[in-house]
Image (cartoon, rainbow, N blue to C red; front, side):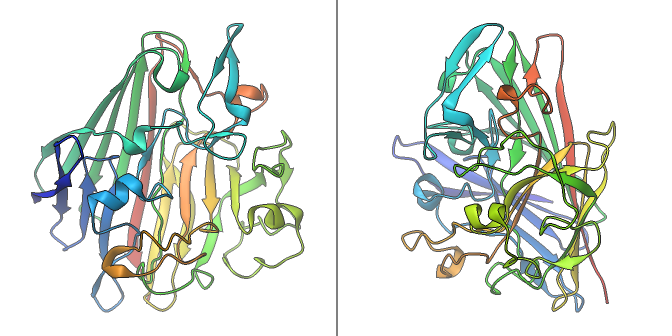
Length: 353
């Protein structure tokens, strides 16, 4: 089942709608045309009680003006590009600087702040097909990029996100979704008790501006070793330069073996109080694990007026490596007219008694 509701009106007078998908189990996912953002995900706990497990805002205005990219689709390039510059086929391109000395999440007005067209396809497994065209030169990127993102609510209580993109000239693309999770409920406090496991043997150390240094470092003996399940908080205060620079986790974690043809299980998170578990299946090679270290904007409280607090939510943003265009040995983010960008990430929800 899909229902459509007016969310608000932009300054130019354009009405913005949200679409709520619901499956036969009662799980629901609400999506906004603005930013293609996930506004709400309600899933049952071990007692069958439905709770909203993602961050976000009550009003469209907060999505326009608030920071943090809550629930939004990110592009053309998710994550950071060093000093907002890259070279493609001998030509240098300059991007908007919006994160210290770097360009972050697409620039001044990335996909997170665009109005996406939405086609609703109802049924037992409802889906929303979102489309956006980014013209040649927008935000400094070459080529006209046509993007389709399909959100599907599966009968198994999973949310599938299928990313597709095509270009008319060589460009760079690294799409992701920036949803913040707390499986106890978005207003239930810090996420340190969540038990996280990731099939990842390397991570990317960064400089002081959070740009990867270029090294692929083994997780062995570091706070970034989640190959065996452990709480997010266990090694949070470990003496570690990378943790110190970011104020916590805000790093690209590289999956063992890299990219796969089909989505495979790469991460799972368990919240012991509610019993909720979330498994992440993807064919992307990496994930940006972010522990919400910069959540503190008092002007834009979360839904219900709940304040933004550091480490109250976490992100698992599947993607390719940050600043990859400037590091030839990193995962390629180049897309040519002969190719199609085609990746899927699935967030599977369940309960463990």
